[in-house]
Image 1 (tube, rainbow, N blue to C red):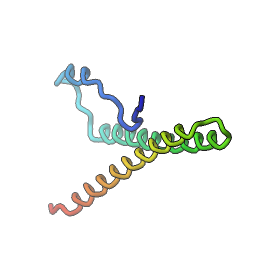
Image 2: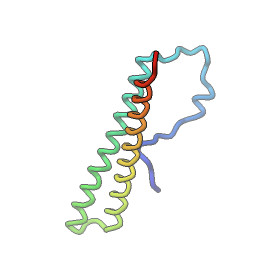
Image 3: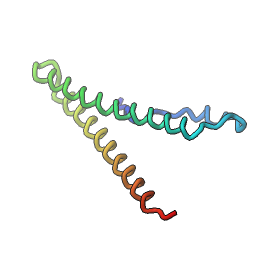
Length: 102
C-alpha cells in the first residue's frame, strides 16, 4: 500500500463533537501549530530523500531490486514536486498580500 507522509488523516469524529463554547486557539497558537505541521512535512520530504540514497546504496551492493529504487525515487520526486507547488502558492499569496492597498 502506498502512503503519503505529507498528508495525515483527519479524524472527523472529533470535529463534529466539538463544543462551540470551547476556548478557541489564539493566533500565536495557530501559527505555532502550522509551523509544527510544516516542519513535519519538510522532515518527511527529507526522510524520503534519505531513503532514496539508502535504497540506491542497497541496490549497488545487490540487496535491493531495481523496482525498489524506482518506487523510492518516484515517491521522493512526487513529495518534492508537492513541496515546490506549496512553496509557489505561499509566495504567490504573499505577493498578493503585498499588493493590497490599505
